[in-house]
Image (cartoon, rainbow, N blue to C red; front, side, top):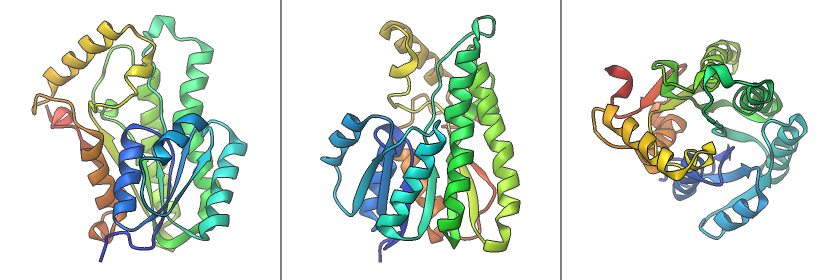
Length: 249
């Protein structure tokens, strides 16, 4: 039997990178998947790459009404939700002396407000003994220049996860997170930096990883499958580092 047979999964930030790789794997393992992203053209494109029972919903997680729409469309299509994977996030680098209010608001709205509001909307629709999964980051354990606001959002999200784990315990809903290190995803291309700067940044990150390379979205997706499946039935409240050992040195 497939690991997620007939489970319903909602994945934010699912039009590329970790979210898309996870959507593909969940579908292979028998799940019904609701994919969301901010760009309709990207969602339309990835729909051609997927096989299985799924729908896509255009939704900006920073927008309260979009979170309501996402969860409502998922419930209308599939009924109850078994897996809520809050993966959407941004990481635009900005040195501390250049941080603006707009930068702060943008990163916190997407990385913190979005997941919190999505959970609020989804809780009435999540099955008891379901699972909530977040994409966090190794930046909560290591300091990287220019990522002050991004790191603060992930620290806030980790603190919120701990509280949520306690609050949903009467329903036996498991709450876990994945903390990737450097992963080869389009997030680096969205930083607004010249390609040569991005390439050099990537080399620098890779050199710090004990395994000496970037991870792949597919490697993170396998961890997301594990934590969402019955294989992790007694794992709750943890943050799983998927970082090639970066956080341990």
